[in-house]
Length: 345
Image (cartoon, rainbow, N blue to C red; front, top):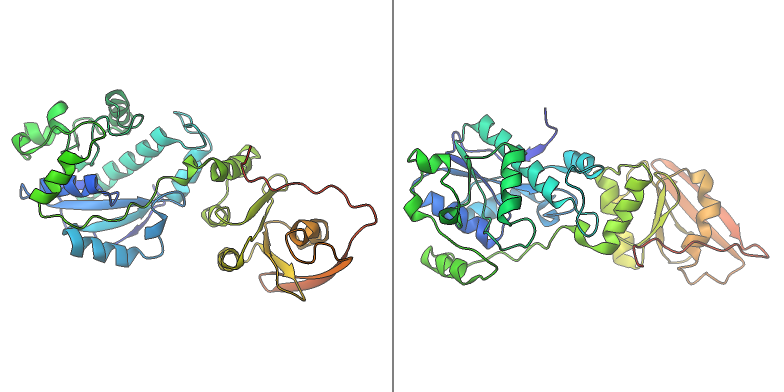
């Protein structure tokens, strides 16, 4: 039993379920199959690491996709299962902390389960052979098909003529002659097909997976290697400010500017401690441990403020309904303070 959150209502009985990334290739793959008179249900997967711009605006995103491209969409939040998988991906990590193959497998398995639940006969992706040097090689694509249990039911309309026929083609549900043989990194064939299909509005790319970013990936890796699997809210906190790992599951984030302070305050839950300078503007800190440790951590906040050279600084804190304040007095012989663990080598 999965724990996914699904937004949107699927078609009553789609012929196919398509993975919709919002990119041109996935739009084209769906339209090619719709052109054959088949009903296609799009699914758009999200986690804290990718497709984040469609989170918290799911209904608008579903509506806009339908209006712009005629694609019915459901949004599936994979966060919980993804964060569990991230601790020990079977196929390992990429250059940073990115489990690309296991991520593809997770999405494909969930798409297969949803297709079975909704009565769809096959799956669709917008993958093009050779477009990406790692995840869209022939051998990698075959591994994903095999391990996800989708061999024979996964159709890639843009490269289908370069691949063995799938079950929907063999059974006559899909006409193979109306599929394509695109390959490589070039975009000219896709742009030409878009013109032929009357698609003249392309979405702005949403950006890649944050786990391929060395600095951000190092923050996440640090917590996982300490034995802590951060929940989605903590992952959101890691996207901002300066990061101090304080052992085990505990960390402190210190905002670098007003907009970051505002985001950190919005994201902090009742379990986190928010603290700041009590009597003047300055950075906001979010800490995942006990308020009892705040006097020890005060220098990490003060060092980034205009009060850094003052002998005494008053700080205020809040955790849920609890509040408090204390005076930090600079010691005669200051202890060395740790530098932020921002993933910079």
